[in-house]
Length: 465
Image 1 (tube, one colour):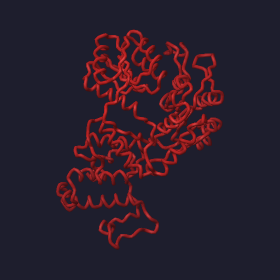
Image 2: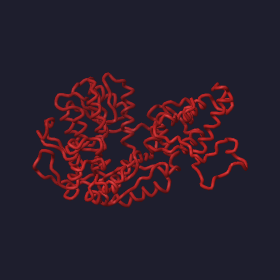
Image 3: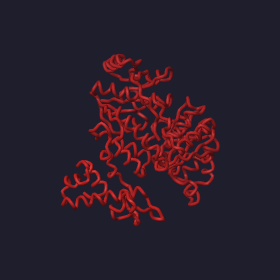
Image 4: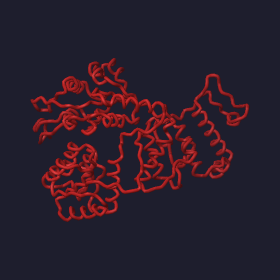
């Protein structure tokens, strides 16, 4: 799934909150950003920043990490509780991988070390505001399958019912969840995502329901859970099938009563949230094997939205690819015009086991490496991606001259996989060209009318090098 963006020629501006305990840095950033057309407010500490966030809307938070009263990461966490769609850029003179990971996990757009390049910061600010301006929940594609998904979203979004989104990894289940939230009556309130498979059971419970001070060894303060952060909004539980059976019991109770207790706490709390769950597993089969509770399955499977894999909506591949080219052109400062014919054919014939996430990664790499004005097939470098099925069907014609054109080409009664059949023919010609050229690759490429670069790409693709 991807976002349907519209590029504007003017620079996106917004309200920026700058938080730093150094007066000179606050003044410098304020002057620089105001010259860029932004509305800038400043705070000299984390607590002052939170007070500003509570009383006025802010589009972008730029915060130092190390401050006396509270860290920039804590400010970002509080900012997300107040306004979920705020974006953040963290800056620091003290390199900390742990802080960077935590900031990015909370949704920070970027993380810069002092001293930073001024032009780089300006670009990061523009990118961050553009990210916030673009509605990430717009689903791109015109295939019948994805059109049906959009129509279903429109029907179910106004309800308060629990939603279960199913689909393979990389199909865009979270974007569907965001689309449901954005079209619901809760759209002005937070959308809070949680990957249930990314945390062990003890941390998952604390992340979801929060904990009281002293609840466990590292609980040095009381912390709100994500269900509280999502009050009157939506919480998205991704990979719900990864929950342990014990955690499933606790989630079931919450879904039944919309009440919970923080870890280590005794007080019952009510909360008004909509639950949207997602999984790439077959929960019905997991119920039969005892890996997923039947009563919880009925609670989450109230309304189901199934997201089709990319290979079942191939007419969407090229529009999605062009969308990602445009996206990475902006990010990398490049001006690629689109896909060369060879690249189009390559993308349409690939199986895309990683779905849209895989396509996005392939295009990002291609845009970064491409030296021409259009993405070429060899820049896609699909041969490096694990899991692609390179086996050829036994009934594929083995003689190339009998497989292309003319009356000699015959379709077997049982049929065959055309994509693999064509790949086999390509491989045969490559092997024959190498043999005829005595192993000299430049000469072999010439025999096939290919550039040496393209020839090397196909040798790698078919494991002939």
